[in-house]
Image 1 (spheres, rainbow, N blue to C red):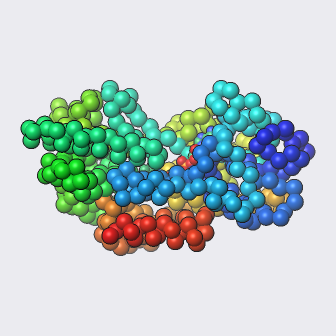
Image 2: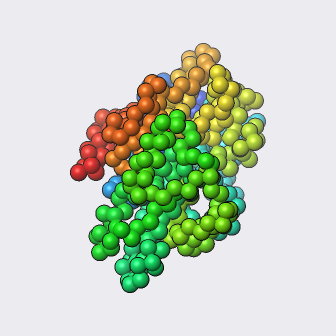
Image 3: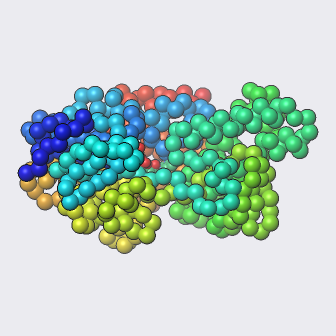
Length: 424
Ligand SMILES: Cc1cc2nc3c(=O)[nH]c(=O)nc-3n(C[C@H](O)[C@H](O)[C@H](O)COP(=O)(O)OP(=O)(O)OC[C@H]3O[C@@H](n4cnc5c(N)ncnc54)[C@H](O)[C@@H]3O)c2cc1C
């Protein structure tokens, strides 16, 4: 039996402590499900270790970046979520995992000294934006991976409005009002669509003419939205054209300056505000925790979402390289998979608490929706293609459903009301 550690995070004397590292989609879902189902079970503690007091629900970040939504729209506050649940939330970070001793070290990077023992550990530390080493890219582009990123984009956009308002020369003004998004996957399309649809309204507030706005999307592959079928891609492209977005597909970025993006074919794209949505990589810290990783840095898992080597460690969400047993491919970094893995893992941990064996996870995808501007979307569900209003309704409903699953009816109703308010 493991010794309970002396720790400001942990409740002393508990022998079956379930530690969850990371409170994003996967970690929060797991903690909520375990908290609800293990209420009153003796000698079990559920502990969530997460540095932020809220989960940042990233899928609607574009609405914060351009304005109709305030930051709270994407922030699921843990004190509210765990108010009535027996979950110990420790606002800190896991610095290291010591599988051989069954403890995690908690605290600031390089200075962590506090140890917390676990009976089961779930690693759910997600992913971060990956910026390739293209000259100038890191210095000049804003990534889109947090509410702070969205606020930074908003700040840069408004700073350019102030500059443009002072310029008499139309060409200079258009250059000052040039917004470029790199990356034609779902995140890039959502950001570029929302910029193109909402910036004109914001510009009028600054006395600017929306005709001066330039919105561009650069994608290295020959087409956008590679995960969707060709028909849906065409519809998305028609919508982007209607919103005035200029597309550069099959175009690799070779270098970036403060006001321009250089493409490999020699094209120079004016760009005063640049957003990079070109990639993600699994939490780089987790790779150093002594667990096996795939070449992309995602931690390998067994069919039951555990480390193949350490039977008391689960790995869920973006940080996990779970292989779909049917397609033999690693499942994509998507919230819908993170949530399902976490729900399944909650069931498995409860089985283990009862002394039963965990069961394999079977990933399924019932649909996928991408917004192209705040009031239009494209996607599919149960084999059926949708676009326009039905698709955007489905995307927003999925978001509300998540708030309902983890926060209950009051939070879901709040989000729904805010969404309806934004459509006015
Ligand atoms: C802009 C954007 C839009 C997206 N839109 C969609 C969409 O429409 N649909 C969809 O399905 N997916 C979407 N995704 C992907 C989706 O957000 C991710 O797949 C999802 O967040 C993964 O959940 P997670 O719990 O694994 O990681 P996250 O939600 O990223 O959570 C990880 C958590 O771990 C914490 N953490 C990190 N390191 C540590 C540590 N050392 N110790 C403790 N805690 C730590 C972090 O603070 C964070 O809270 C989008 C992603 C982005 C960036």
